[in-house]
Image (cartoon, helix red, strand yellow):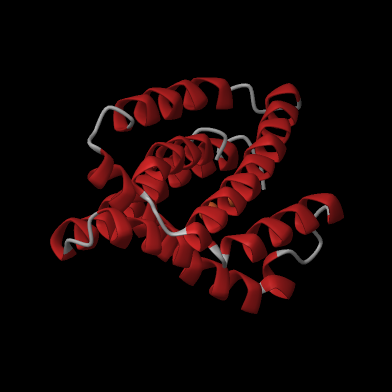
Length: 172
Ligand SMILES: [Fe+2]
Ligand SMILES: [Fe+2]
């Protein structure tokens, strides 16, 4: 997340010069503000994890960093489609996770639980903003459809990779 969310903010900032609707510009600023506070919290969580039994996350973070730097070299339409696609997947993930919150976070650390729930609740607003930005900038259907696959599969692949590295360290 500390690599994905700065990517979303940078892409949004670059798109702002092409957006003329004041209400959408306000939404984009609010979106960036939420993503900024998310990645700052995730940065602290990752640092805590690295210092407390998960040093391997450092290598994974370098991989994430390279991946998002490479993505930032793609054209703006592709990046906005990625953002809208990723946020579409996130919205559905959020709905599922909020419904299952009691089971998913049962027995979990209360600070981590409230951090994730706060993050997810704010994520629920992002799909609409990212979609509106893409439509205002381009609106082309096919790249947007591709963006759903690109954004979702890329984030899930990286996330699963990081999750298994953490699970490998836990002995049951
Ligand atoms: Fe976020
Ligand atoms: Fe988001």
